[in-house]
Image (spheres, rainbow, N blue to C red):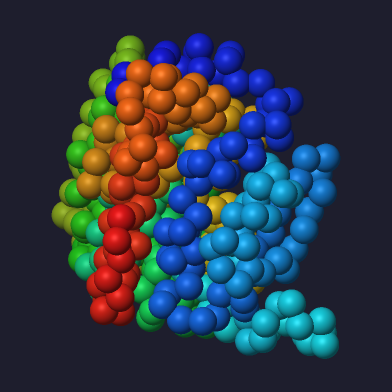
Length: 413
């Protein structure tokens, strides 16, 4: 189904009408059964799972729980939350008022990547704005993290979700991930971040080596394939004096910094400046080896080019979201209250084809629902299949079905 232009869809959604149309969305399109199936994991602990609702007027309700999908759906229609968050599974039923101390026991390991964290390196947009050019930062993030989580940690059940405006979430739902402690989650997050502990450096990543270890080598290969397209051509980060200075500030050696500045001075665009920068760094490193400079000096710049590419493009994780066992995260299929977009799951293999400006919006979905029913006999057609939400729900269904297979719990769709 052809999606309308993003400008028209933005204009046609009026945030003030959201609370009035949410009951219809929750009643007919929100995949309640599959959603609760996912968060139950084939056991009877749903009533220990925390949900929170944000209602119109900034009313925030925490520690909500539900016995089944039917009760959850009724509360959605009744309370009309403009945002749903999912939290941890607790040791006791949340409705038991006798329990005063709430102890989380498990939850999905989650990752949150926000486009605003790239504002220092993206020039096409800033703050909450997102376009197809800067979405490529998210493409690289997904490609780096998805392979690392699967290959390095052996996780299989990853749900990737567009946040509805400017970011992405990943829900790792393997049992091994769900039962990790906060410390263990922190170790995973630190491993994936490739972050330096050197707080004095402007570089986000310092490899402190003359050779790349396998995880860093894989990340560099992914980033390298996108660097020219995103950083030099789309963002043109070195076209301005400010952008050149930003790059120079990443150079730890003062002599090399001056040499790089001189080499780029007469170049006119980002591509030629980057080539001059790389050539200068490579020459500098070769001279250090010839002069038999000490290892401590050599490792400062031996992998500088790789470090710079990672600095610009490697995923920027909010580690606190991952480590906090009781941290809540926006649920898939929520409606973003400002854009009207649905927080849709997407296939990480096809992330490069995902267009954040063509995501289904609630007003368009309800219109599609009406148009379909006017033109087609629809008694045996599931509601979401009458709309452009069809593909997103299919991705979610397959994700939950794969979990059910692990539990030998067949599910019909």
